[in-house]
Image (cartoon, rainbow, N blue to C red; front, side, top):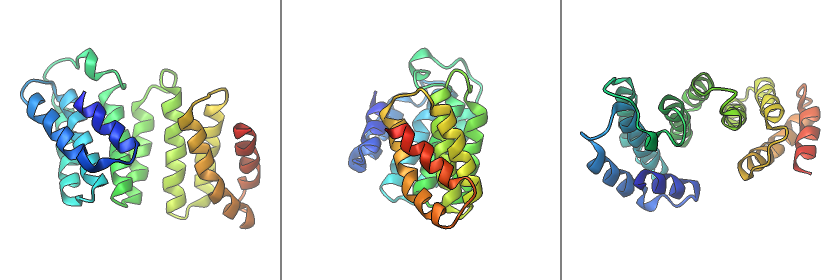
Length: 200
């Protein structure tokens, strides 16, 4: 529950007490949970540190999370599987942590890793949002053609979905697409039209 509260605070851009929340969860959990559950706590710790600008601590927490994930010491209990498989969650949140740390190449690699760790049928919305995030990381590296391809895949997967997160993801790419259209990036005009239609 403390981990969930920390993530909610991060989503609301109120990270002030996130580190304390996750450290409280770690204090209660270490030595009592399996490696996959522990990895979820450490990755939340990393995100909390990154959100408040404590970069070295965030980097250390990322490494500890990966180590815990590799530990095979029992099944992951149902309460920690609520958000999906631990490996996918760790990859997705590692990408978000690296985004905050301005590691664009690392962010891209983790988004690509996340796509292999989430079942594309069972977690279709996660795949759609991950493609959108991957596009953002490619755009940040001035790789416009690849960004358009990733965002196009995201919109294809989002067809028929109605959620606040998917609408925000679509809205966030529109300003970049305006620039790409002016630069005549292939596919940008068509994608801008599809994004506009998806939000209508």
